[in-house]
Image (cartoon, rainbow, N blue to C red; front, top):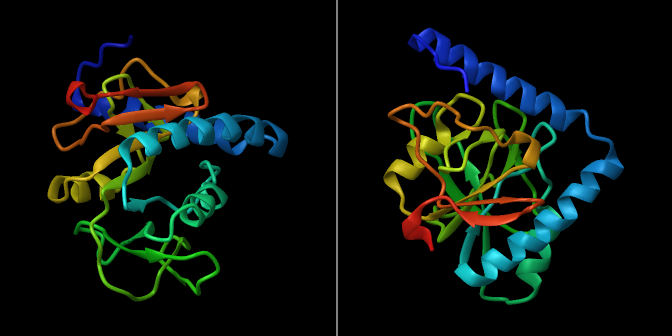
Length: 199
């Protein structure tokens, strides 16, 4: 493990980890991606069955992230009382909110071109599925550097489930004081609690 000597060194290491993981993910062929996503979905299903949320938040796939739309659609179809949510960014410096998503609904687009429900009440999720670029065994992750999930998880108390591919696993992401750890990590290799109190 590289031992950084300054805050600038840490920032550089984090940027490099993020860029490497995103590049590797975006380079996946369709067949390879499918081969990784299938077992990830199976393990995610086992964990979500264990956690039994009524309100489940997920993210629209971005930059090669696992596409969970079909999986969430099946999860909804199994029980009409279930509610799927997508995050909505109201302002860059504030926590995100979550609105109900249903398959086929009309969507709006945020400043990054990511679709989200354009209207509806704000609902606090029981479980939120959080995409990870790089992540470590302690449950800390690297997103895209905007801090959206860190701000959101600081004011909400859902179970946070980090989702990523095994090639994004690192010894440490050099977490910062504002970083919020995941409760669980799910990859194509399985799922495991990242925090002792999540078990």
